[in-house]
Length: 158
Image (cartoon, rainbow, N blue to C red; front, top):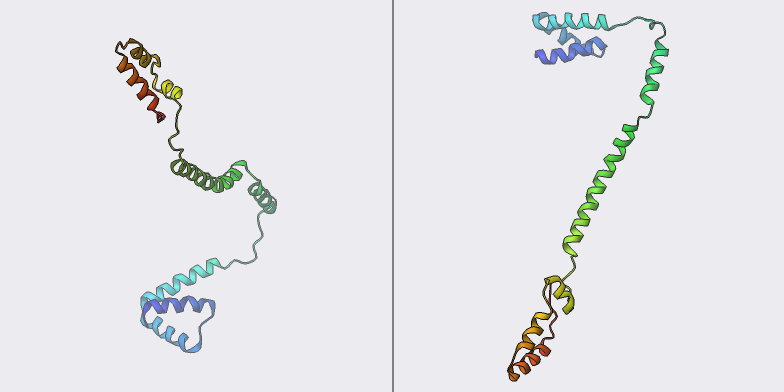
């Protein structure tokens, strides 16, 4: 028998769980092995010290124990916050990710702007083109400007 097996059986022998054949095998090993005999004596001392006879508790033991138990049962605000935050933080993060994803995927497309909106956004002077029109002296060129200005149907984009 190995010492490791003997130690396991030694512990069982203190509980009275060994049968006849294993008990005689353990006794034979203990006679031959001084290390296991030392462990048997150490375990015996521990077992003897652990056996407690009927011991009376100290005076007012139950009163002190009950007050400590009541203190532990008292609800503290930070415990409620901790329980709530463990559930709320993942939900808030999920909602934030959904919102950011919604902004990324559902951004509004380019809108068509009217001519006046385009001029305001570009901060252009609307009279600059008309000034060049009125300053033009040749009639053919004026007519061409009018024709091309009327042909511009595409609204300006942002």
